[in-house]
Image (cartoon, rainbow, N blue to C red; front, side, top):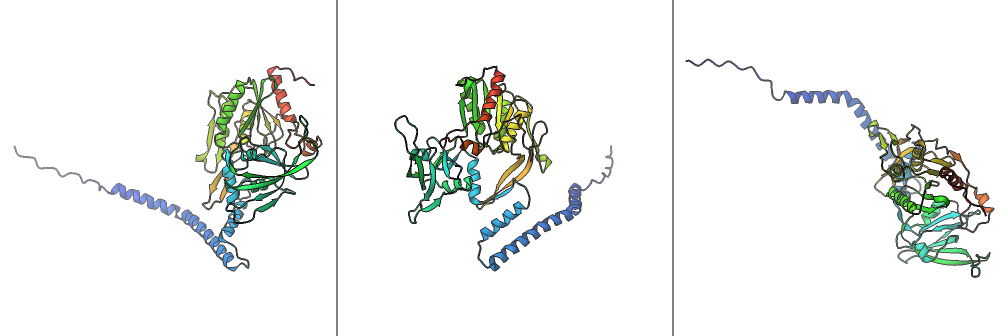
Length: 435
């Protein structure tokens, strides 16, 4: 049987056709977007060229020489100020370092908390346990008249910082902080001690106390048990690990017989958002804790509570004031929206911006608003703050000074008293006896 002739096969499509199609599509896309891309690139480079030209002119032509770093930092500061956002700021190296330190619970310094008297004298309000200040013999109530900053190498005379009249506590705090191992001598005025069992008299003595700066562990929380099983937990800010410390504080108070909790967020200006969310999760059993709205919708996030927190049924009240801000407002607002706590005090600051810190590589940085916080009920904090459920004013400085309390002594606290009263009523406990 003869072989049948082979039929000619159908021509196959070229193997490179898909590749050519892809290239064609890419060229079409590039053509469609080349206008916007060229405009974006050229606009950015024009701006950079203008900035570089301005820097050259100022460096070469200004009558009084300036360093390039000084001029560049000034330009960056002006750029950020031009955003007209109250939460965004340029951070010079010292301010940037201080902000980095605030994100942890330790720093290099003396280990004191300072405040001002009525006539703006600097005094020590608190001395941290086991701190360089405590070891050197500084005490709460010491008035600091001036300080001598010693040269670490001993080659120059000490630099004197006069505290006769203090205008800024943060600026003075920056002066007193410094590098680990450096020395500063504080010239203080202290009431002379009375006789055995007697309070200090009206006479004073002046002392020079030298402190060697060291790494200080700043107390993130303070706890104590009030009458009727009411626990008190003061949270100063939200550094890394704050949630774990709060959980430990709750456990310790429960061990002492706590039946309800006052959470103090006064003077707390925020910190890490994730820590605030973790702390809220200790108290909220389920539902949304917080949502964020960002420039790019793909970056929007929603955080939910998880069951099993150690204090989900614990009766609570939260103390807030005009300095409660950012993460403190996130925590207080979430507890308020979920009905887990009543807020006592005055209206909060109103910082609802998601802030990120961007280092610039030379020690400086930028703090920039990149989004907004949205509370569980859809409320925005920004510019509004949180209204307390029970409005209670704290005594003014003038009212406290009329009491003639010793420096460093705790003044009356009607806000804490009101919060404790709310919780006693919730627990059905009788009011404390008055003497």
